[in-house]
Structure formats: structure tokens, C-alpha cells
Amino acid sequence: MNGLALWLRYARASLAGQVRYRGAFLMQMAGHLATTLLGFAAIWVLFHRFGTVRGWTVGQVALFYGLVNIEFALTETIGYGFERFGDDFLRAGAFDRLLLRPRWTVLQLLGHQFRLRPLARLAQGAAVLALGLGMTPVRPLLFTAPMMLWTVAGGIAFFLGVLVGQAALSFRTIESLEVVNVLTYGGVEAGQYPFDLDARWFRRLMTCVIPLGAVTYEPMLAILGRSPHPMAATLAPTAGFAFLAIMLLYWQAAVRRHASTGS
Amino acid sequence: MMQAATPYLAAFRARWRTTLRYRAAALAGFVTQCWWGAINIMIYAAFYRMAHGGDGAAAPFALHQTITYVWIMQATLALMPWGCDPDIADAVRGGAVAHDLLRPVDLWWWWFCRATARILGRLVPRALLMLAFAGLLLPRAGLGAWALHPPPSIADAALFAVSILLGLALSACIVVLLNIVTVRTLSPAGGNAVITPLALILSGNMLPLALFPGAFQTVLILQPFAGLGDLPCRFWLGTLHGGRAILALGQQAAWLAAVAVAGRAALRRTLHRLEIQGG
Image 1 (tube, rainbow over the protein chains, first blue to last red):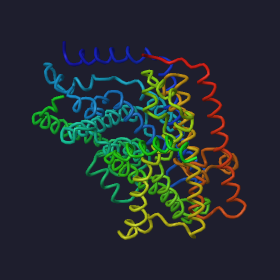
Image 2 (cartoon, rainbow over the protein chains, first blue to last red):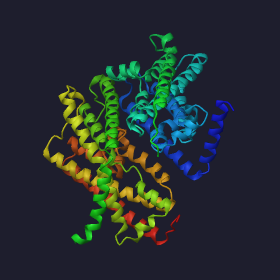
Image 3 (cartoon, chains in turn cyan, purple):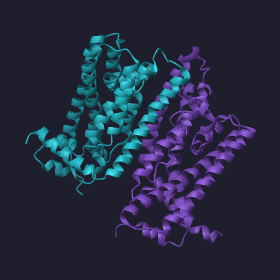
Image 4 (tube, helix red, strand yellow):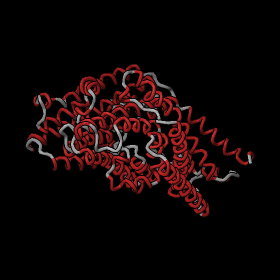
């Protein structure tokens, strides 16, 4: 069985388990949908009170908001094994079992749980994005649609890279490092607004050190036709893949050094 | 009298000590909240500076007041009723909740003390770190424009203290209510998924309530969740005085009493016909 087929089988098994608890699942979906929708309501209220900010309209901010939420929601559905790695795998010694199987550890962790819960975030991200597209003139569809897909792919790579890095770090701490939430949930929070609203040090950090801007802000500028360097902005999501590659190398190095907790 | 309070104090002390043990979690929470606060402040600053010619005339608060509001909200994030007591959720799932029923204590007070202690144990370390960071460190680091400002007078500080204590009690009452919902539905997921978003938005944690459109202001001030964050913050900022201060504290006390009475009634009905799961 090749890697993809195995992953699909993992995903099917995980989905079958989750839909068993139908009532709890529907209630949680409703709750999460409400939470995330309220997040956009807050932005709406700010614009309602202040009008526009630095030439940005609420429709344009909706595009940023929708994009980063879609990226993170898709990452959350597949990346849960890495998010919970320290607590669920390392501390309990369950990681040793993965090492015994003749498959790549990353593939097994990606298949650990295919979560449905983030679908709420995905749904509202898509709704807000559609709203934004309806309110804002963007480049022609022939450019916008592929560019959007390409950006989302880069964004998934970036956030997955953060989760892989978090898991690799937990080889040192033997627990999931919550501080990484600053980059995941905090990254989503930061990516919801155009970066030129932020302080300069923050913008630098988010573009040069952590390529969050490369998978949210820069490509969206290209889609809006506002980018000063359209060519570079079109290529920017590549940085998300590069980030993931670096984190995977770090992961491999950490796995090689791994000594089990033995429990 | 003292004798009667002993078991409740013991429950409080045990829970408080257990919660304080999670130092790494407190530190991680603190770092996350600093980050969150910084992002929020940058966004508000951009809106205030850019809109309406730079003086933020459209806003009810000045920018430095909004910044103080953000830091207090981040410092007191643990005050929110984040959900049913996880120990009790486990006990309900496994059937061990029967042990709680066998204790010769008033179950509502027992759970209330546990909830208060857990909230306080999570709140105190995070809040102290945050006050030290935003109130002392930032001004010394030359970032005074981003700093938390102290209350304008001692009276305001005292009113804030009373208000936040009422908020703490209300939050604990809501947690007990969520415990009861868990006993009834056998799962904490439903109740938690409903309460958390409500509390976050209606307490002003996501966005100061005063920034919402004017038509909603009266309703927003009168609803119970305002007492978990917005009203204490207004006291800290010194914007509530005289009759309005009394009204705000009265609002908090009234909701506290209402939620407590409702919780006690719900608990009585729930225990009247209780089925325990597991074995």
C-alpha cells in the first residue's frame, strides 16, 4: 500500500469514529461556528465605528480574515497528531510504537486523527472570504482562483511546519509546548489584518523570521492588485513550503536522537 | 459557624494548591496573552490613528484607555467561565460523581468553593505577571505608550476590587451551573461550547463593549457577562462614578444572586431524579 492510500485509510477510520457521537459533534460544531463568527463580528463592529483604516475597507480585511482561517482550519484537520505529540505520544511512550512500524513517522502522525471539528472554522472562513470577494474588486478570476489555491497550499505548509516544529521541540521538554500557540492561534489572529497596520518590528518578524506574511499578506496584495512587486508576491507562498522543509529536517534530526521515556 | 465552614475551606485550599502547581502552564498562558495583547493594541492603534483625522473622535475611550482595557482583559482571561470543572466531567463519565453526593456537605457550596479556588489559582499568577509586564516593565523599557495605566484614584481602585470579586463569584456560579448541565447531559462538550463564545464576546474580552454600536449599549451593560470584565475595567479606568457606579455594582450583585439561586434550584431538581452512569 502506498503512502497516500494508507493515509486515506487512516482518515476514513478516524472519521467513522467521530460521527458516532452525532449529538455532541453537532453541538460542538455549532459552538465553534459561533465563536469564529463572533471573531469577524468584532472586526465588523470596529469598521462600523471607525469607517476605513489606512485605506483598507471591511471587504478587503474580510479577504485576509477568510484566507488565514481557511489555511489554519485545513492544517488543524490533518495536523492534530503533531499538535498533541508531546502529551499523547512522547510522554506515554506511544511514539515507540510508531517507530516499530515500517512507515515514515510523519505519515503516521498525519493519519493519527483526521479531525472534523475545524470544519466550523473552515466554513466560516470560506463564508467570510466569499463575502469579501463580493464586496471588493480583485484581479480577474483566471489569476485569482489559482493564486488563492496556491496561497492556501503554502499556508497549510507553513502552519504544518509550525506544528512539526512544536512536536520536534517536545523531544526536549516531553510535553506539548503551549507557547507555540503564539504562532498557530496567534498567527491566525495576526494574519486576519493587513500587516501594514502593525508596528514595523512586528512586520519584520512576521515576514523575515517567520514566513507568515508570505502566505497571507503578500499574496493577497497580489490578488488585490496592490502589490509593489507582483512577481515576488506571486512566488511568496513558496516560503511556506521552504519553512515546512526546514522543520521536517529538524524533526528527522530530533527523531534520530530520540531516547524513549520508557513508560 | 467556623466548624461548618471547615470542609468548604479544605476543598478550596486543596484545589487552590493543585492549580498553582501548573507553573509552566501559567507561564505559557502569560506569554500567549502578552502576544495577544500586543496584536490587539496594534490594531486598535491603527484604527484610532488613521480614522477621522487621527484623534479617534468616534471612540468613547481614548487610545491609552483602550490599551489599559486590553491589558486588564488579558490579565484576567482566567476569570472567564471556561467550562465545567474537568475533574467533575471525568467523575460524571466514570460514575465517581456518586462520591460527591455521599459527602455530608451542601453540594452547591462544595462545587462553588472548588470552582472559585480553581479560577483564582489560574488567575493570580497570570494576572500578577501581566500587571508587572504591562504596568512596570513596558514604561521602563520606553514603551510607555503601550503600557497599562493605574486607576486614576484610590477610590476607583477599591471599586475595581469589589467589582472583580463580584465577577469572580459570578464566574464560579456559572461554572457550577455548567457542572450541573454536565451531570444532566453526561458530556461537558455541549455546555462549554455554548458558554465560552458567549462569555468572550459579551464580557468585552474580544472587543470593549463601549465600541459596539450605540443602539446596543444599554442591553450590553445590563447583561450578566458584562460583570466578568467590562464593568471591572470601567471601574479601573475611572469612568463609573456616583449613581452609575452603584447601578453597576447592583447589576453585578443582582445577576450573581440570580445565577446562584437558579443553580441551587437546578441542582436540587437534578439530584431528585439522578441516574449515575458507569460502575
